[in-house]
Length: 338
Image 1: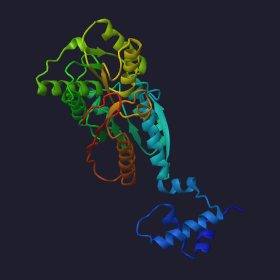
Image 2 (image 1 turned 180 degrees about the vertical axis):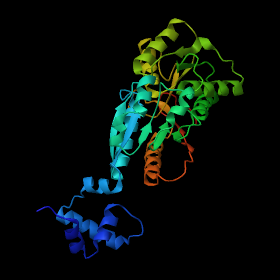
Image 3 (image 1 turned 45 degrees about the vertical axis):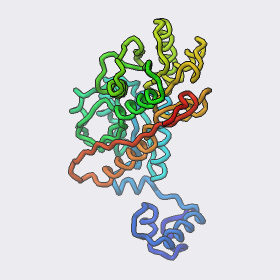
Image 4 (image 1 turned 120 degrees about the vertical axis):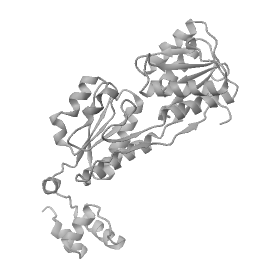
């Protein structure tokens, strides 16, 4: 027969309430008591009745994560971390992919599917600052990314300007003066591309190096193919450069491939720096110097923040902007002194 809460309490010699507190990870339980209950649960093979528990609490035990494109390695890795952290806390994750389309993102925010979840972690790409009022939703929401600021919801993001500035400073400090940039979005000010371009330009200004639009490669998407195509276009212009800053790692890896096809050696002829510190950056040839923007911390903090909001739904709104720390990871593609 299926083990019950009463069976666990009897075997562990505790009350039913104590078993319930252990299952729900309540504080103020003595470690020895917790261990005894967990041992009884394991011995009996007890599985909590989640449906009954959720009906009592009014919660589903699930959260949603909406990202633009899981084909982009950054969002795939982010989703994996969010899922692992949520599972550690006893929550499942429903993943939505918006394609970075504004209308789909707006539709998602009011989708009846979200009634199956207790809250949403949302990384918009199509929506912008003019859409900030659309974040007024009747459920807990944590925002990621750099498309919308000063909204009515908690926002966990990275220090794009500072990190791109420091990546450019690193190249300048190591004697690079003609630093090409790959991945700019024409006319963008707010957004990852616009903010990272700003950091790049600020570092150039500090060093007294003139900004040159001829060595800036513009793209629409941030896939490897875009990085390779953008680099081929720069090479076709016959402009001189001794370093490349890719606005994400996939762009940088695509650019590095195009450089190698053209007989430009990395790092002998051209240094390359990326942004995101994807897992594959360690294994490219040469391995990629890059910015670690705190992705793991961002994912874990987003889950923690959302679950705290879900647990205290009656609390007055007091949205917080939380910025992750970053670091430059020096590898073979730009082997200078940090």
